[in-house]
Length: 419
Image: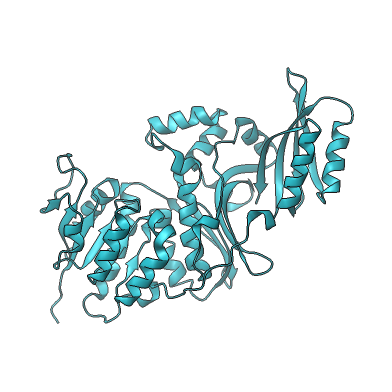
């Protein structure tokens, strides 16, 4: 059979889309037939022969074999992708929000229509992680996947540590440099990382994940004092997406800041880099790291997915079967209040006799053992800053203890879980 060029339609010519166009010029087995954009008058540094502002012309074009969706969001992306699938078109997407919220419907529809949905770029930008989990690591039974999944927050936390400045100061710097959006909510409040850990948990544990049941907490409460104290105690603070098997076999999935020991590999990932750590048998531990965003790193993953399809199309009756999502069982996800963790607790307390005794009594009554306790001096207002690191304790006991401490006029500046 004569080799046939794979015909591509692209939805979105922003940072990632233009990167895809530039990289695909190096391959002669793929042809970009058309692209859809929001603004036809916007100047771009790439040329596509057929550009439209109607994305439905892409998904309904009978000439197109693969729809590449890199516009983001759920509306109209969900309708566009499902329409393309019904038209028997393979899908390559970088849309983490769409997959986290509607992945189950999209994967089921794709299986019904015998098309592949590839999404390497949707989790960690240029880091290859979906492919390895589904292929070379397929023989493993995983117990944990954890990662630094958002470059913006990692950059902010890194610079807060290096410059000893506040979150707000560092956010302004990150926005000026283009690392953070004008509205940074999706990054700094943990939504972006939440969408990504949902997809990672889905493929790692072969369960359908309910993104609405994932605990989410961002980095806006992290202070320069927290970062400095953590450093003195031998830790770094990172925003971590975590999915792990709990004692009863349920899945514990969450996103929040964590203290990471400096000896831990993942603590050494700085600036805008991402990392994904997998634990399981027989591989034990393996970590992937690299650029989690950007024009060419993300385009690398998108183009890799496109070329995988091109390698089998049109010769295979079933394209890339190992990459298809065939599991349908919903995950039994536990609430964070049922988890156990070690904790860093920054406390503002009256500098008076008996305060440390109150701390010891309240923690003891709530089954919490103190690993270390450090008084950081007395403020001008006469209050003392006390740092407590606990041994492993139940989240519910920690929250009960915090409520009891407040009744003794003891304030909690911050609570950060320890990895």
